[in-house]
Structure formats: structure tokens, C-alpha cells
Image 1 (cartoon, one colour):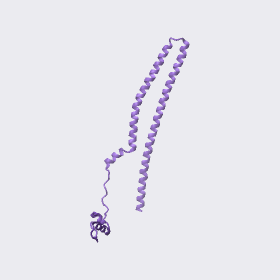
Image 2: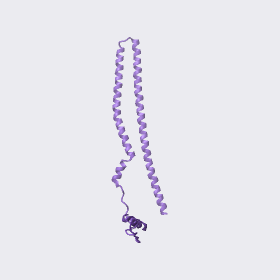
Image 3: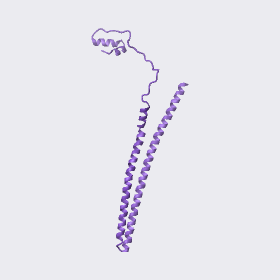
Amino acid sequence: MLPLFLRNLLPSGGADHDAAQQGSTPRRSLSRTNTTEYRPQTEPLPPYLTSRPLLFLTLLSPPILALLLALFTLTLLATQATGSVAAAKREILAGCTAAERASRVLDHVPALMREQGEKAIKKAVEGGVSGVGVVLMLAITIIQEVLKFLVDTFRSTYMCCLELVIFGALAILIGAIKEVH
């Protein structure tokens, strides 16, 4: 048996169908009961989200979350870089003290061997310092390029959003003007 609201919506065949299912004679209804008319609302609907949840969702937008993640990563790398710089200083200092010890040993050998040893030590120390300089310059270049990429990504994202807002507002204005005319 169909519910009452479905029976009222169906044409007279709906009553025949119910009667056939029940095994009795069909009832025909000439008038529909419980009919309602659709009336548009005169009151505007309240917004689905109020300003507080909208503000919260704005803070959770992907660009802002990515920016926060990038800042967190950079601060983490900065703290690790401080430790890495301290370790590099220790290693360079250890290399310099080893070179100093080697030059003290050379004080006890003949002059010709001492000159050649000093040249080799000088060349090794200069090569090590040059290598550290190259590594530091590469690290600075990498950080610079990553920051450029992040800035360009966020700039492009915000330009896209700004363009969307401007073109959306223009489309609404053009539609309103066309509707008025």
C-alpha cells in the first residue's frame, strides 16, 4: 500500500494500483487532498556559514597552510644550519690544527724537505677552505632559489585569486546591467 502523500500525488492509476494490491475494488478520487502550493520565500536565507567559521576556514586555505609549512621548514632548517655551521667550524679548526702540527714536525727535518712539506700543507689548507667556500655558496644559492620559488608560487596564487575576484565582480556587474536594460 502506498503512503498517503504518494497516493495523492499519483493520478487515479495510483489508487487502482493500491486496490489491485489489496484485492478489492478500485477507489477513484476526484479531488486531491493535502495539496500545497509552492510560494517563494520573501525572507532572504541566512548565510550557511557566519563570519567566525569563514575566518577559520580562510586560515585553513591551502596557500596559507603551505606558507606556514614553508616557514616551519625554514625555521627547522635554520636551526639545523646553525648546528651544521658549528660542526663545519670544528672540522675546519681541526684541519688547521692538524696542519699546524704537521708544520711543527717539519721543523725537525732538513730545509729542503721542510719547504716541500710546507707547500703541500699550504695547498691542502687552501683547497679545503676553497671547498668549504664553494659548499657554502651552493647552499646559499639553493636556499635563494627555493625562496624565489615559494615567493613566485604564492604571488601567482594570489594574483590568480585577485583576477578571479575582479573578473567575477565584472561578470556580476555586466549581468546586472544587462538585466536592468
